[in-house]
Image 1 (spheres, rainbow, N blue to C red):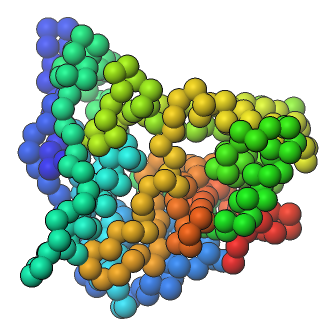
Image 2 (image 1 turned 90 degrees about the vertical axis):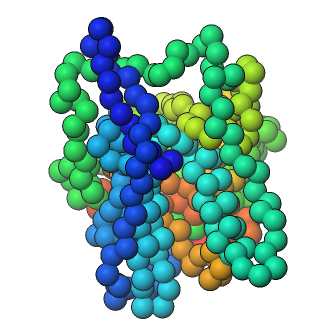
Length: 345
């Protein structure tokens, strides 16, 4: 990960990409912020937070001019904020959190009487997995070199005002949604996470300014490690994921009985390909020797109206959604009595 993507062109003028050693770290001045400012689920938080504490976003194209991995540590009044950004072409969520879990365990295990690291070492093997399938180095076609110089801003240049808010769902509320979705479909196969995704999709659509005949879509990132032939090992370090979509009209999705249908459609997607869903990532177990995290937030990369990031919750069995929406939609969602009744405070 201490590397940078390098671009070279062959006779066909197609750039190919390999790695060159480089690494980026940043230690900014101490901040006047406190941990409680990040732990409040009742308040929205502006992009100023993510730009200040995670100003290291790495899009694919930026990997040509910047290192794939960047780390920023900010000292707060009563703690520390560790920001980490990794180019998605180098690793997916499974690999990222494997790295972060291992890093934190090494940090807290240093010193006298240190215990052996429990994390399985990452697998960087490529040729045996892709032999006969993919020619290395990987080659892409670009119209011209300007394609490699795309610049991204903290808010991705959106003309609408975006805001973010964290919503937490307790283990009990998730169980209620799962039971409701399965009951509506007359099945027991819909999982807790699938029911929760359907619930979020339904509630956001209900509070967006869309007509009933408009087609709305939910993109779900699905892991592919265990479904490839031969399968990739769980500790494979790389990016092994793709996007699957569910579509419906807004009017259909707004119906109360649509929770079960939406959950079933999401179930069919994840049934085809086993998903490495975000709630499975160990994000609150990352103890660097200072104790468990007070809060976990995603950075500003690829944020848009409708981007939802899912993490495990701090409490056992809970799940938290970091929701990025237009300011008007997010306000309407927060004032939706039925939706807020499912949120834990």
